[in-house]
Image (cartoon, rainbow, N blue to C red):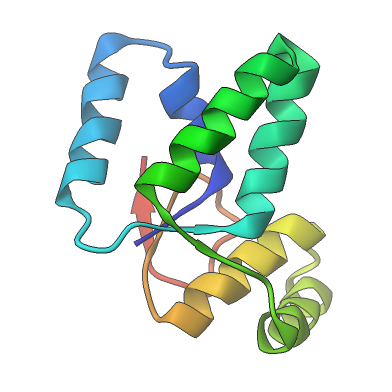
Length: 122
């Protein structure tokens, strides 16, 4: 499974205890835990803006220790360009979705933009 930014944001800032249990269950069920390098960027940016660099560093370090990071390569960036143009979606979403397509894995998200891959809803 490829875990998208919204999964992590929900995990780091859960609205209710039941949501946190559901997110932990998804984590535990995943045989392969993947994360796009673009998601790391988004976690860093959002965390620095909302809670500061120390919190952001801790979050990114935790994610990197629990997930295999998939870097954007030429194949992913080309597919993302096609997806972004056709679906009119933000660049980050297109890059993350293209990563899921390349890896042939479902994407853990609550974002309706991810229409080109199997989704596991959070």
